[in-house]
Image: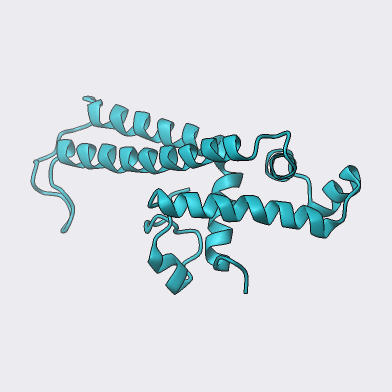
Amino acid sequence: MGLIPDTVYLTVEKKLRQRGIALRRAEEAVARAKARAMDISAPAGAGGGGKRGTPGSRTERGALAILRAEKRLERVMAWEKVWKQMDKIYPEDTNEGYVTSMIYGNGLSQAELARISGCSRQTVKLRQDRYIIRAAFLAAQAGLIREEVMECGQAYQADGSAEED
C-alpha cells in the first residue's frame, strides 16, 4: 500500500489535470448563474408554485444557483492556492516540477518522459508520486480532502461534494 489511499491520489491527479480550465469554468458558471438570475425576459411565474422540494420563486432559484456556483468557485480557488504552493515547493527547474509540467501540462506519458530525460520510468514515477503526495497533504491541510474520502474510497469527490464537470 502507498503512502496515501489510491482514491486520494486519483483525486489530486484529476484536479491537477483540470488546473488550467477549472478556474475559468467556475468563473463562467458564476457569470451564467448571475445572468440567468437577472434576466427579466423570463416569465416570473406565480411565485410559490414550483416543483415539490424546490424553491417557488424565480428570484429564489436564481439566488440559490448563484450560491452554488460561487461555492464551487471557492473550492476551485482553494485548489489553485494548493497548486501555487506546489509551484513554490517544486518549481519547474526541479526534478518533480519538470516531471509534473511535462506529464500534466504537456500530456507526455511516463515512458515518453523517461526516454526524453534519459532516466528510468521508475524514476519518473517516483518524482511524480513525490509531487502528488505533497499536494495531497497540502490539500488535506486546506480541508479539500476529507476523512470520509480516505475511508470510503469515494474517488473524485475530495471535497465531499459531487463533481459538477
